Length: 606
Image (tube, rainbow, N blue to C red; front, side, top):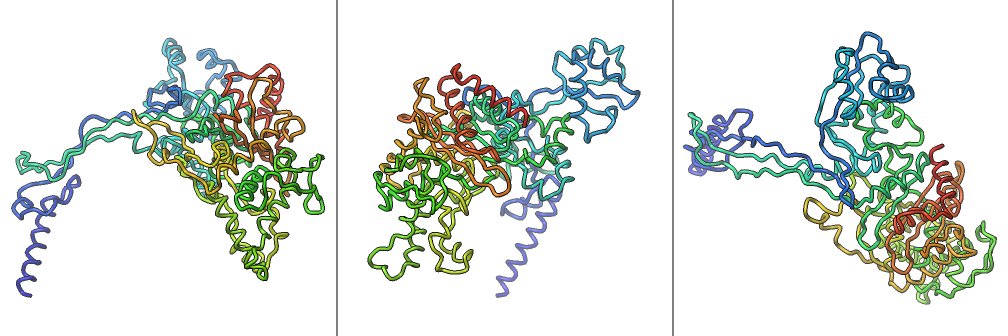
């Protein structure tokens, strides 16, 4: 015991001696070595001189969207009072532009414009200032290296560099800390920060008192340049979709169902991508933070809502899988069960039920799922109801619901699907009946889905039962996406049961269907889709639509959700099919140009 105690004490003394020798701020602890080495040498961590360049963000066609470049700033003088008309003439701006640019830079409405504001300038505008510098001695132009956005589109996707967003953070914290953390979204800039930043590289020499190196105390790390990110976005499609939604509240997600690559990702109301980091946008940021429309909320990933009638698709697929119905099942439009807003013929098949979006039809579909009692449980309907709801939930959840899909953005909500235990607690009894949960049949009540989940649901149906997780980066440097985005996921519903939905989804956009006005048959594109109108007790109903095209060989799947917009057929479906046509054809047919202008005009007004 004495020997062990002595050995332990000697080891401790040696360790303390090494720590004394390595006490400078840039030193680190040495690995176990002899006592002589600890006393004689000093461990250092030396940074390599070269700084890595931060990687760029490019769209799917290699257009640069965000890069580190020089930025010119015009410092306005505090005194004397500035002649804004003369300033506009100097910069080549009209009077409206001068007033707008200064107002955007003010920290609050009514602030005086001459208190040291900074305005971003182009290289041509800088030349004009420098040319007349003698006449404008109080103006000062500075140049900084910053992240520069080449597009105004895709703000929630591109995100921001945290170091450049500090003024935004300070503004946000003044509006309430809880609200700030709920809204914060650094986009791909934050999610892939380590890969974009690169690595400076460090050496780890052991030095004697004369500064001579004697080996290394740790492995050196190599310099690595920041890697470019090749996004899945089509920036032209993104900008087009943002014009369709504009100032309206809602979202649009378009993805390639074959790969899970997100083609367009719109969270509306939209705002320019540079707003949160630009030095002359304090006024705009203040408006965004105070707006009741919550424009900074990343709606497709973070906002989970009842999906409405678009959820009838998954209910039907689950019912087919469980044998509760067949594709030829017919049900009466019995409005004593639930109201039906569409005047339509009797739905004598699943295809007709989807075409007319008949609420009583899907009430009875779900009733057959929940109230089915096998012979072995004839006397225990309560247990059967619990088991059937659990089976339904298991099938539907396999489609990526009630869990995060893992999109490459900093925050994502899981949505919600109710469990039997949830209803036991909510209804305060195990003996709840189907009548108390029937809202599930029309996508209302306790079901909540995000925009990403709705778009992925459309992709799953397009693929007849499988999907790749939705993602925003298709290439890192010269490589591909993160490995998890290359793993194909299969649902628990057979492909035949998804295929049985397609005729009804095609019929939705044919004559007599709920979205027949949104057909693209005139340009040879068959769209498969489903409309939804989400009941809202606090105002106008919300409009929803999911679909894909071409129906036989899908290349694009789209989900649209517009808050307080009314019917899905008249508000959401037109936006979705215009995005499909724009992507598949590159242009909009003359027949829909007037339609397009009307939608964009309304989007600008709101």
